[in-house]
Length: 81
Image (cartoon, rainbow, N blue to C red; front, side):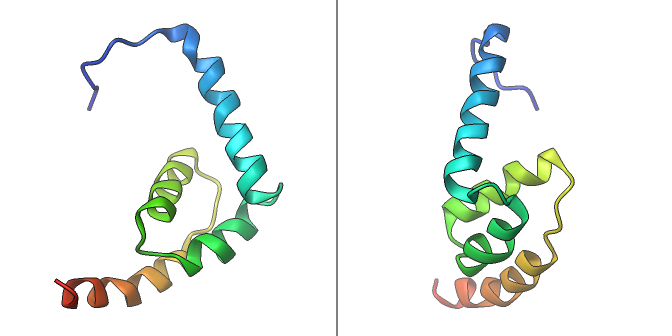
């Protein structure tokens, strides 16, 4: 799906730089450890889920621990409603 927003292709470099800055700050250089640790611990919360979705679009990471944790969290989220 393409968003109907103005898009300036020259912003690609800025976006890539921002993504790298976030990964450096958050993942401390080891993205897989960040996925398996901090993001997995907070599975089901919006920020970690957003990061996982973005990282999944990049490919090359193992999300099995995150998926396992999220599978346990989803029923609890539904019960809270």
